[in-house]
Length: 241
Ligand code: NDP
Image (tube, rainbow, N blue to C red; front, side):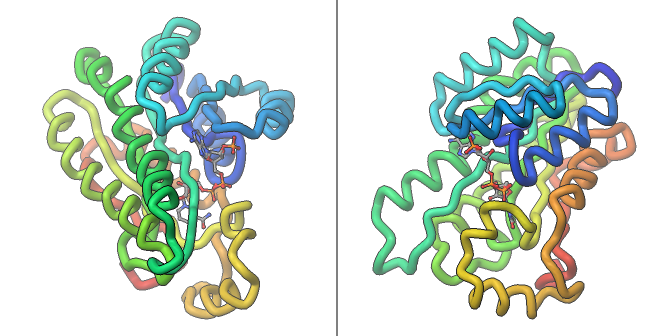
């Protein structure tokens, strides 16, 4: 992976931050995209030396422009990690159309937008890695998350379809389905709900962001050269997928 240029969306905090560091530590030139938290991005870049660039992954043109700017500055993009994601939870009766659309636009649309910006170049150069971050809740569903579960489930289908387009051209497309990981996103889950969730995780705890990042780094490495269209479950045994 030495010298590969990698973009990690939502790469300045949480799971994305851990992925940015894992790829940097394995020799990649990493650019961390983020959505709006400038202060966190500034601290991240100061601490790590990794460039952070803001654009909305749900905005098609912004992805085309952002990826072109990365390629101009750092070289052709070899690796894309579609990690940026949001939640807008609520039972169906209380979920607005905007809550539905925003989650689909960012979580699933972001994967399409980033692939449109980078997949053709990877194919032409004969090497590429795309890793999409799904979720155990996209595999099993989750009460109060029809938008999120649908978008994450869509990511798993997107992965298998795009993998078929890249397979003969040295481009692998895989997904990770994390279980519950200790980040800001999970901190937003009400404590009593989280307690019940943790009680059902066989290993008895939340995951650490670096435990997801190591699996991503594996999928980006030559060791995973025969893997494409796969979803790796990294979830502490939750649901035993
Ligand atoms: P966090 O909420 O901690 O971080 C989300 C990241 O996504 C931030 O860097 C944020 O940027 C970025 N982001 C949000 N919206 C956009 C946007 N429109 N454009 C660009 N970047 C954006 O999330 P986690 O680290 O917990 O989750 C990372 C991924 O893992 C998500 O896809 C999530 O669904 C998935 N996941 C998480 C699990 C968990 O338990 N934590 C479990 C299963 C899956 P900014 O900092 O600027 O706001």
